[in-house]
Amino acid sequence: MSTKRILIVEDETAIREMVGFAMRRAGYEFSEAANGQEAQLEVAERLPSVILMDWMLPDVSGIELVRRFKRDELTKSIPIIMLTARADEDDKVHGLDSGADDYLTKPFSPKELVARTRAVLRRIEGDTEEELIQVGELQLNSSSHRVSARSQEINMGPTEFRLLKFFMTHQDRVYSREQLLDHVWGRNTYVEDRTVDVHVLRLRKLLKPHDFHKFIQTIRGSGYRFSAK
Ligand code: CA
Image (cartoon, rainbow, N blue to C red; front, side, top):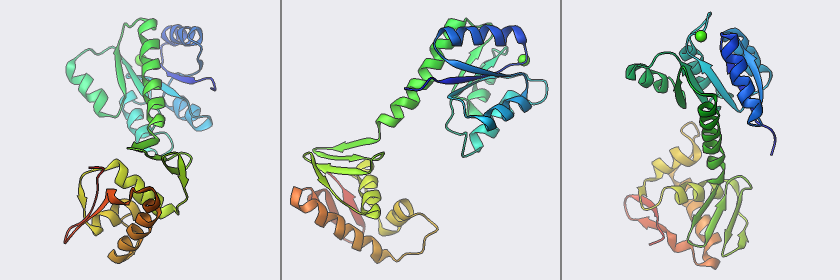
C-alpha cells in the first residue's frame, strides 16, 4: 500500500506545523498550502489522499474551495475535513452542506485530527471493497470485470456486464425498459426499447447453465425485475 499524502490548507503557520508533525508521526506524507491559490496549485500537481481545509483563508473561504473541489470530476472523491474556529451548529451544517466529509472545531487535538483522517480514509477504502457484489452464489467483481457462478467464470460482453451489475445492485424492484435504458445505457444514447430485450435475453442465456437465469424475471406490461427469491 502506498503512503497516503495529506494536504494541509491553513494560513496559520503554527497550526500547519503542528498538524504536519502529527501527520508525519502517524505515518502520512503531507504537503502544505497557506491559502486557496497554493491549495489549488498543490492539488493540480498531485492529488492528495485527504485535504484538511481551514475555513478562514486570506484569499478565498475554505467552504468555497471545498465546493470547487467537490464540483471537479478529478477531485470530487478526495475526502475533505474542515477545520474551523466557528462552533455554531449552523456553521456545522453549512460546512457539511458544502460537501466536506467531516468537521473539526479549533482548538482540536492533533490526535483527534489523525483519528478523523484515518476514519475518512477507511471509508473510501471500504467503498472499493464493495466492488465485489454477491447475490447467492453469483458474484460480480466490478474492478476486474469478472462474473462467476459457484466459482465458475462466466464470460460476458460489456453491456450484459453493466446490465447484470445494475440488476444485482437494484434487487426486487421492477424497472421498465426505458428506465433500464437510462440506467444502463445512459440517457444520451439512442437505442430502441427492444435493445433491452435483446440484452436481457443474452444475459439469461449466459446465466442459464448455472441456473441463475430465473433471477431475471419478466413482469408483463411493466419490464424486468431481478430477484433471488
Ligand atoms: Ca485561518
